[in-house]
Image (cartoon, rainbow, N blue to C red):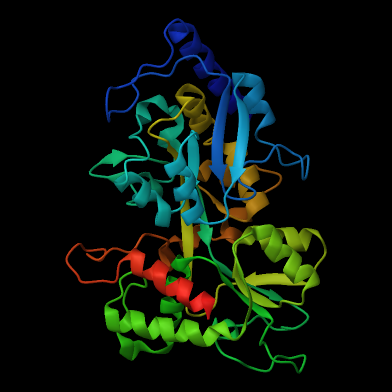
Length: 391
């Protein structure tokens, strides 16, 4: 860790000394920056809950204070609950960075809301997991628009008192059934409040009803899509809440009697830290997931501080601490060893070896993922899911 911070400090001092007179050098309209200059004193980040911590919840988890000390760039964070909210906030502007998942990143790229990155200005880029360096959710036509941050699966979270044995299928959230406590699951399960959740239902049908012919849960023809929507309409009567706020879901599992839901490892960790009887599992059908990238707004007001944060975000200590806090997998494999909070077993526990088993979020398009098909586009996913939730 000390060596990493020393290298980062040297990098920041060198760029500041060389360019303090002129600031960062832009690359012209649509082109990436050519150099990093003196920081502007602040950087604003749109992030998922738990992604940018300064020790306020737990002093052991703080990767902001040292960055601010070294760079004099004050960090402000706007927590967003869904990818759609992130896209909306980036469209409004005024922010520097966003930790976008794959179902938002390509929309931001296509909409011209994020700028191409000069990875030569991010010295630690070479330390990123090779499986992520050229991922299609942040790389278009060989150009990089995001710095991989963290990744992981959407897990099935459950109450261990109601489920003495881990549930093996997502059916506990899609089909009405009597649970081990003798009560129905009706009104005691949750579903995600975002159209991308349609992919979770499609993945469930892919496994339980193979005759439908679903291959990729993000590539659905109209007939497949209609059957998935029917499944979700049936689920509607079971759902107590369509969640999008991680902290509200934590409260629901603590105080409102909810016992099963798709969730993020972050909520599982927070509930376990609080001593609640909660665990998680990836069911037999598999899971969707997220691979988040830090992306720079095309009109970022503080691009120099933003580039300094992107470099800092790849610090192995930060990567390991964040993975321990959120229950995610670092984008930098070096973070998987020697971190007291994560432990050397943490990456394997959080799914490091399950990369190829996860259907990572992406934005569905009419052309399908192969560019040749005839799939239902995301706009119809949004309209249909709003109708499902509205009953």
